[in-house]
Image 1 (cartoon, one colour):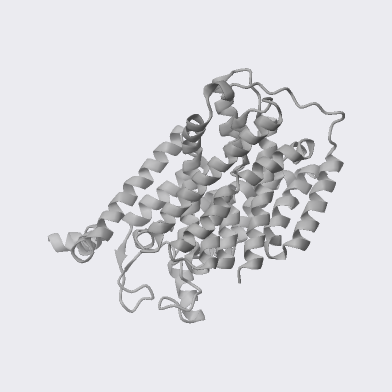
Image 2: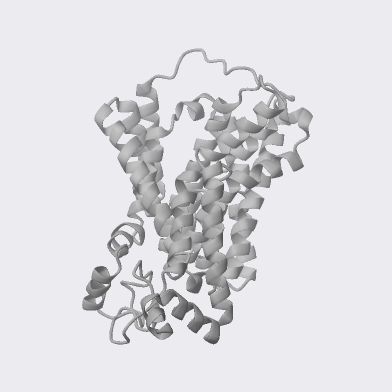
Length: 415
């Protein structure tokens, strides 16, 4: 009777089997289930970004709970899930020919979405189109020097993590793919890892987006630690403009930037095009396209991205020996980038004679628009009359562009 019940409710059997053969993997499954539930809670409370954390948390909890036995004759064999097989399409023990891939596409319900949008970078391009349609490049055009300087300082983690990752035994390509996490630009991380280290694509993607969500909750503590309350309260004067930047000028800027950057860095041109396509659509006044990109394209892509990232947080992936250093290097890269951004904020503070609020530095980390909101929230808390969002958005948008440039340079130079 008891065996029949276990046959029906396989979760007990699979967990017991893993406990007997690999206890650490069983513990990891349980920890990841509770971690997923915790991410949902933090997303609901607004501590972390709910658009990513809620679908990601539910996917993480469910995939580690829904493990089952497969007939050895079935493609998966042994123990697995009905969600997704990250190695599908590669020449591995899992998939060796086209018929195997077709079988997996029929078995795993998320496999078509993963194979045709996630594992080829398409979903990253869709997200960038949506982000571009929300960006106002006028903030960069109004204050190009300050925006670019802060953004460059905020790439410190991207630059410094490259040699550190190589010290951990990663190749130059793997180290570059890992270090781009410091740019805090999720789609760019997806795209770069596919170009340079496709075998590490899944763990790098998971680590990057997990930490980008945590950055929203962690960066305020870094700012409070490194910037005195007196400086946080600096009230910046409203931007003085001789004339308003027109939509035509913004559109011209986006078109020229897109063409020039694509010419210089063709390896990153799909993402560069996607970002500036969104900007051009926004400034062109084509209402139907703007609503499409800002609504269905952006939010459906973000929802599927968060859900797939959670599903990919399966215990076997997280417990891979190569993932632990990734966890450390990812958080280190974002930490150094945050510190670099704050250094950039201090640089502009001294250059301006104390007129620039150094909190702006954290907005140089290109997690659009999260770090801009963090900067404004902290400035408002220190001084309710301090409005720095226009300046923060300029640094934020510049951060996206500088990360794209560095990713393109990495992909071009590291062979």
